[in-house]
Image 1 (cartoon, rainbow, N blue to C red):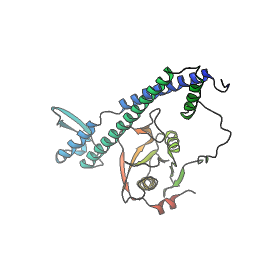
Image 2: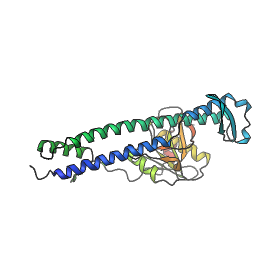
Image 3: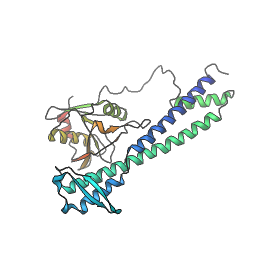
Image 4: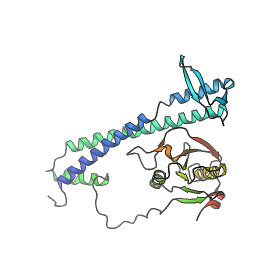
Length: 283
């Protein structure tokens, strides 16, 4: 048997991998429970539109009958700076986001549970005396990242030192991630009271505004950058979600670039502008 293959090392690597996958499943289950039933958001949006002409917006909330259960009532909080219809749209938007979030978590959960089944089956069939199996499993574990090997040389281009950087007209720094790994680092290390943006429905960069109270102009310029550095670059109108960094969280085991959020988000719709991106670029 080759001295380079250590059965105990392979056994420990499989054990570590299974433990890691089980922790991923636990984390995804917690994330799944963390997002409340999105249907109630849809109900609130529908009720606001139905009773729009009867609602006193100045109170900041309204209590309306639940059409699913006529004997029950629902308290709906309102943003008095928005119209009743705009408040309804906020609830509908949050409904769609939470629904997609749950679907994404469920997909990752199903995939991770399937992975765990395969890992357990491999562990149960492991025979440390079977040299052919040792070679196969070692290679599998290396490819899956559970068993590390020393790399003497790599032709891979190094990751960029920092995200794209821009300064708005108000001289506020805006950082735009260049790839999924950088998106993660940018988002997860940003100050919790900074603002964060991402295009709705489409793939794109994570964007962090280095301000706790950005002006409307800064928000719109940052939204334009968000739209420009996304799959919506060629569209005329791109909706951009606006949140605080503190609303974001990343389920353990989730793929790079995937984050979820709690609470409400607002939306800015902009037209991507290459000239504006060039004008605001810091370098």
